[in-house]
Image (cartoon, rainbow, N blue to C red; front, side, top):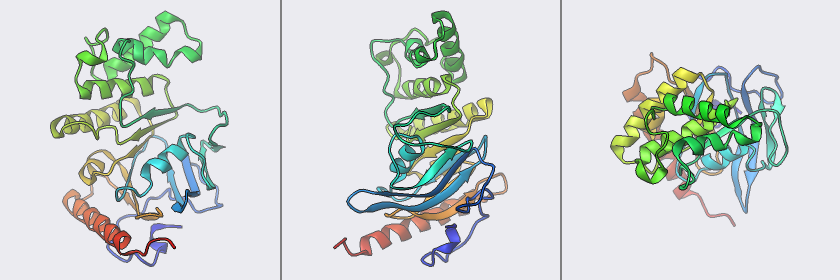
Length: 277
């Protein structure tokens, strides 16, 4: 279902995402989310479909509690979908089942081991790949350099700032050379200044590595600052509200205003909805 298929939404339309998935139609995409639904006691995600081309930086945003993180976990194979499917390079990603692709994940918290140095934290994820210690260390140093942490390789997490710890978490996720990098509100715990710095850094890292990124945020300005494509979800149960190209031709001030309006409409709709019976 495309964004325009929902009769609730008849506001301003931006350019549609060219790679939006039509259910059942084969499309050459890096990542395809097709008719995905998720139920707990009530439906939380309903028939969400979108596609991500190789090298795109796609942001998922929507009202608080709409299911963004749940959808990201389904994409990463960390949680099963109730309906629909996710494919990476055409291969289904199913929770609990092995697949040939590498998926990097950066969580809201850095999850670094405090007794290891930054280099050792990054190198640790390479152990299952069967690489020797010297090669693991070289790869870890390479991605710490890409993440702007030259000179801090031998520091422990407690000795560096929150922003530097989060850069280390990004380096750790990149070290496995993932087919897709998933980021779940990775800057949510940072202060405003460090958050802006990290937004610039993650854009630079994306340009330098060419990785495909799916990034969850509830901050509209952040999504507009970092994403090449924005997927706006509705209030629960989450559906696609808008698919938006965010390129050099985009009027960012107007886009932020439009997105804020959409969020408020969804919040008001959710607040006005009758509780499930």
